[in-house]
Length: 153
Image (cartoon, rainbow, N blue to C red):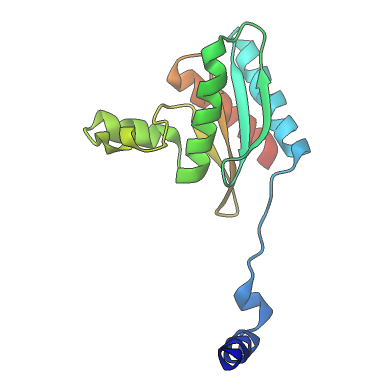
């Protein structure tokens, strides 16, 4: 057993550190606040009452904000949309379209295939996602996208 551990250590030492590690961008709380602020401003332009969820790359909640007038169901929907967009690394509209086209297998997974979840992509890497609920699906996606645009400026 000792020889196996020494052998494994030698193999790891043979690879330079940059081959073993990856530089990763991470969403900060300030970044999430900026997204929510811009998303809420976009929603208020049209008097939409919405809930906003920002998650990290693994789908863990970073920030949640429920606007005045948002319905209780919007809370769960916004969080589920954000988590789905982060974990599947694609807009939830993609999954929504797949289910509508007959790929109902997604309904048996942890995915929430309803438009309104948008991944946050920086330098080709998904670092989190935004989920919005309270309007039509297209309105939710519009507001989520406006929030993300404020982060990447």
